[in-house]
Amino acid sequence: MAVVTISRHFGAGGLTLGEKLCDRFGFQLVDASVTEQLAKKENVTPNWLTAMEQEATSTPLSILSTMVSRGLFYKRAGMPGDRAERRKYMDFLTRIFSRMASEGGYVIVGRGAQLILKDHPRAIHLLLVAEHEKRVAFLEEHHNLTHAQAESEIHAKERERAAMASRLFEADIDDMSLYHMVLNTSLMPYDWMLDTVFQLVSRCMNRE
Image (cartoon, rainbow, N blue to C red; front, side):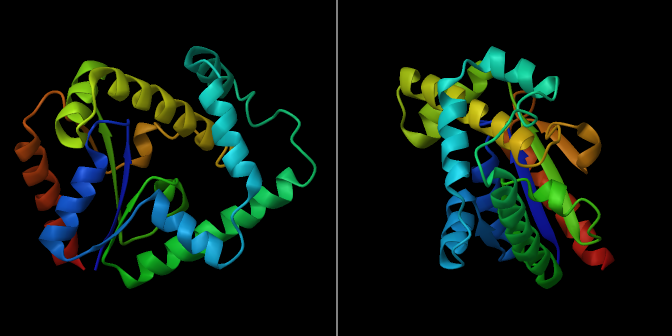
């Protein structure tokens, strides 16, 4: 069985896609909350990760994006033990995602699974993007948020995503070469996008 990783610009419908894939193929959904629960059970959740996301949330996105693009964010001096905690968490992610890929039947949303499983033969990597206003509208419709709440959530999640990609993976998470398919959900009906992804996953599973 295949394993599907989904990276997304927040509000582009990545989590919804993950749920639809699980319904269609009987896969199990693994999002950030599931990953963190597993990490806590193994006592490997690093305090610096929470601190890093909080720092990112308080940093203007334009400044953070510049820092990420220039490789400055993850090269800054960290707190004592920062490197060891990062290695510990990376080892944990590599261990659990590799096991899921070997078993197959998982959809992993976020947490850099496309980077960890970049060369895994069973992994299918998807990136969802969308225009900002379309993402705001999607969150309003599917998550019952007000316009202001949706705007705030998108800005916060974009900062966290950029920070994690840089600090944890030291990589450009939007590098198109990482993905089998990049889908702009602003430019096609969501049902069309679902059909396209379903066909890709079905073909990859039939090829095994």
